[in-house]
Length: 250
Image 1: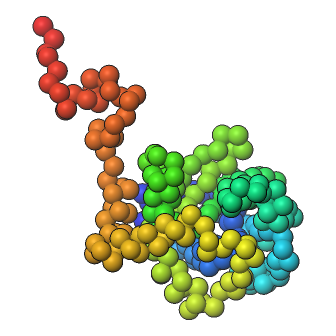
Image 2: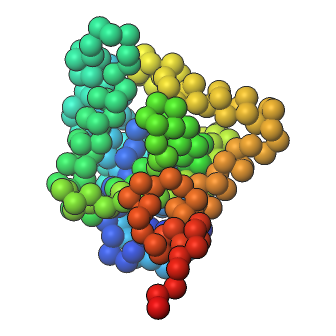
Image 3: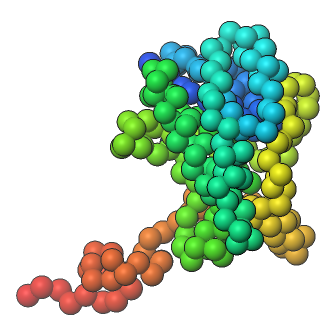
């Protein structure tokens, strides 16, 4: 987390950070880590944990008690987003994951702003970034992944992902060792999504090519726009000068 903060300038003095607390291992580990990071980083920021109600009988009390033990304000925002997304899904064989995620992000950002937060922290990790990268290529035909830091002009919020350097396996170990109050997933599509398909694809690649996941993650940081087919740069002599000889001006 310190490395990500240093390289991507994630956290500043005076920030009030809303942690999206779903109740899963990732968001709970993020909340715990940010709580500890504030103790030794010498950065003066405050935390607020926000859970957007997924519906389907979700019980937020274990999360409320955990936040109370850390002396972190907790907000349980109504919305029943999973339940609502399931009711609105079309009968086309596709999952309602995109709609659910959009509703959940919108509700989280709204509640964060209402509680005076200027930053929203999400618990995405290294494996999430790799899976998103493959999903973007195979399903959207573009190169894209999760950004460590992004600014939302419409809301005035900054979204940060402090755990992008952290492998999921490490998070599982931390959550188990600390006995974090991980809540069972209520979504019926959990483990049956495109992201799960990409997770299995990365495992298969790693079996065939040692350290494939490490090399893929390194590739995300070693990008060079000059080596990609950017149609908007093709007529830019500065961008393409290394690919073709440019006649010197007389």
